Image (cartoon, rainbow, N blue to C red):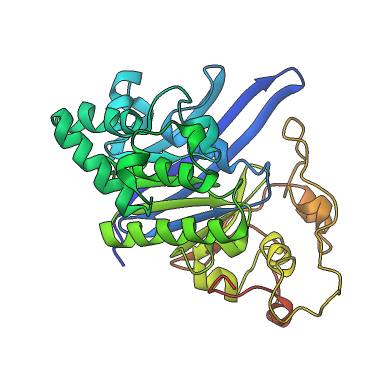
Length: 337
C-alpha cells in the first residue's frame, strides 16, 4: 500500500444557512486518502457525508461557508478559482452521484455526455472520442455499447444509467474517483455488480476511490480504510480490518451491532440504535452521539472529545471507548457478507 496521500483534508467545516438556522453539515473533519487505495466513508443518512464530498469538489451552494484545507496531490484546492477547479473536475478528480437519473441530461444522447469531457480535457478528435466512449461502455459492462451510445438516458435501466455515470467519471483517467452513495436507487443484485465494478476499475487503473455509503456492508471488503461520520464529525477512522475487528467508538460499535449477519437468528429482532441524529442547526455540546449512547457520562456532554490514537492507522473520538469484552458482540464481517 502506498502511503503518500493523494488527498489531504484538514479541519474542514461546511456551514449552510437555512430558514431554521445555520446547518453545521461538516464540523472539523480531517483525513487522508492514500494513492491507489479505496477509502470508505460511512454513517447514517444526514451525517454530512455528501456535503463533505461536495465541499472537497467545490460544489457546495454559493451561500455555504466552507473553511479548512483540502490538498489534492499537494495542490491547495481551496485557493483555486472556479475556472481552475473546472480544469481539475473530470480530468483529475471525478464524482459519481447518488441518482444517475438526475445527473444525466435527459435530452442529450449518451455518446455526447461521455465524449464532452474527453474532447475538452484530452483534446482528441470526434472519432477518437467516439472510440474511447465505446471502450468505456465495454469496460463498465454495458451490453451492445454502440447502440447505447445513441440512446437517451430514459431508454436505459437504472443500473445501465449508473454504469454510464461511471464511464463518464472514468473518461479522462482521474487520479481520484468519489462515489457518493452510487447504489442508492438500485436493487440488491445490481448494487453488488456496481460496487464490484467500482472496486475492479479502482484496482486495475491504480487510482484512488472514495466510496460513500450509509451501509457498512458496502464498504466491507471493498475498501482499505474507513472513516465513520456522525452529525458532521469523524467518530473513528482506520483500516477497514481494524474498524470491523476492533471498533472503539460507541457509534461504530452500535452501527456494527445493527448490521444483519448470516448467522442472525431467523425472525429475531435486529439491534437498533435508539433515538435519531441531532438537529444540524442546534447540535448538542460535547460528543454529538452522547444523547443516544448507553455509556454516556457527564464528561461526554461537556466538550468535544479529541482523537485518541490506537496506532498509526486507527484513531477515534470517544472518552468511554468500547472495552475488549464488548467486541465479541459486534456484528458484520470484513468480506461484506
